[in-house]
Amino acid sequence: MMGRLALFLLGVAIMAPARAELSARVSGAEADRSAPYRETVSAVMVRPDEHRVWSLDHEYRVFELLPRNGVPPATNGHVHQLAVGWSDRVGAWDVSLAPTLAVSSNVLRHPASMRLDDWRLDGRVVRRTVGLAGGDWRWGIGVDDRFGDYAPWPLVQWQTTLGEAFELTLGLPSNGVEWRVTERWRLSLDVFPDGGQWQVRDESRTRVSRLEQTRWRADLALQWRVLPKVALAAGVARLMDRRWSYRLEDGRGAERTPSSANAWFLAISWRLPGQTDN
Image (cartoon, rainbow, N blue to C red; front, side, top):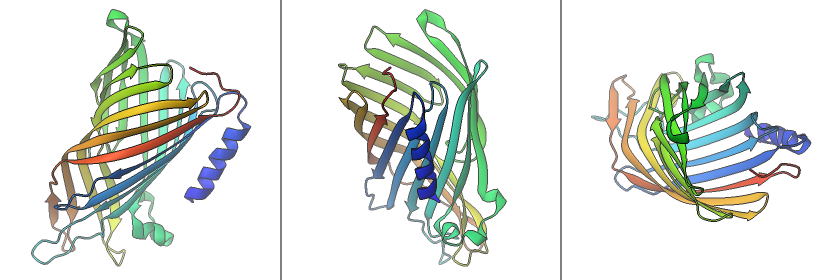
């Protein structure tokens, strides 16, 4: 399924008339001996015009979940998230929608066990208005699992430029600053919630429960525009305030609170011929 969707987006990108962009990102977490955990994240994005974006995102995370009093967890801790996203300008609003499948790995191995409530609809509606000191306000509402459970959350942010080299974003849910060092190099720091929620199965795929992760993430990234249409980025991240909530085979709840950990990530983006540079 992932391969077919990626090929479809690649075809759309190649046939797009003016503004098409492909990007991919992979990341991995540092090993934590006290609470082993790892993740990989990849994405493909197609931008047919200035406002419209199609995307395909895949996340794979592995949690080391412990038994309690000899009772094992009701999942092996291997979870996937697949999302097909769309965003566009609708009147004065920026609208994003993404049907998302977030399940344990045994559901993907046995698609017949998939249920309608394994899917959810992530989304966001945002309005931009002129703010103070030459900046802009972004306000609206979103719904997804970034705070650890699937729920709506408010978006209120103020964005401004400091001189010609710096761009600052302050507010909820994320904050960041970007420094345009030269025409080819950019350095950025972003802090944001990066939790998740998955509907998981036990080994027999008969018991359904939820695995939730809450955490905050700080990304420090360096981007290099290798060619006018090609950019590479690399960075490190700090994963903080982490908590894993899950169920045991007997239905009781359990939690782990791992210490903070580091992660790395790599990204590449390619603007297809015909797209103007920003």
